[in-house]
Length: 329
Image 1 (cartoon, one colour):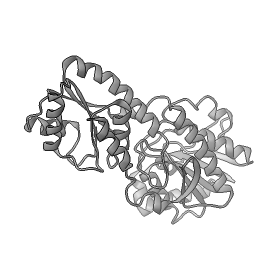
Image 2 (cartoon, rainbow, N blue to C red):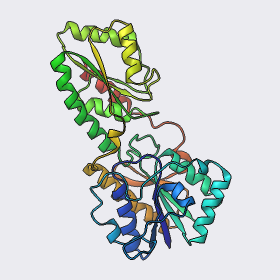
Image 3 (tube, rainbow, N blue to C red):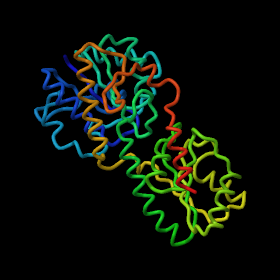
Image 4 (cartoon, rainbow, N blue to C red):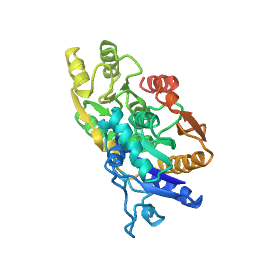
């Protein structure tokens, strides 16, 4: 079997580890691997990874010493052409012409939707791996890159708290998560933040201000508030303005971590997850499976139909929301 592998959409720490797992598992099974650069855009442009021998196929040497590296050696991009039928037909034709029998796309919601569209015209097998820091795909307990993003956010929070305490301020720390509060909630718990504003729960500014007044009355001199960029009231700057309008008892500052969360060496949890899922994706292709995403539930690899992976919302555990409320008293 000739297997194509690529990354699409936003980069996530651990994508390289997943590429490595796909290549090594495939070569161990006697298959050939073609690395496609820059995701669907690179596929349309026939931009393939070239090995040291000048050939468009990936060898063991191609994935040496990349396990610990952030980003992706295959690069990534977004591709508007895959939203339209001509682009989908063009991608299928390129795959056919280069004899690529199967695909392992690594990415998030958009990557899966692109694969679903491509499968209308491409008869080969496609099994995707969940590579996104947002952890917003259903059917899997975690996505590749999520744990590292949380670690990065917590490290930043530890530094911000030093300034918050020194100046007796409230800092609003904005993290990624357009539709998901996973990074914000997990970072808030692990970093000791008192409040988290996330899309899954209503953000009640008057109630938050009253909570802050009670904290102030108890002698608390500084506060950290995590804000998911997708909160219904907006990002950190928007919520900061609303707090000030409601006479917040603390002076406030806002910090946006932004793309900082996507970079850096993947933590061990993301490396292990990426290795497990990359190898399992190849196993699924060998068994004839297609039209699914591989994930992990309770430590075991599972197959998730694409429609289930992108249907609905991967909600944060309500018990962790209650835990944060208890910890902030």
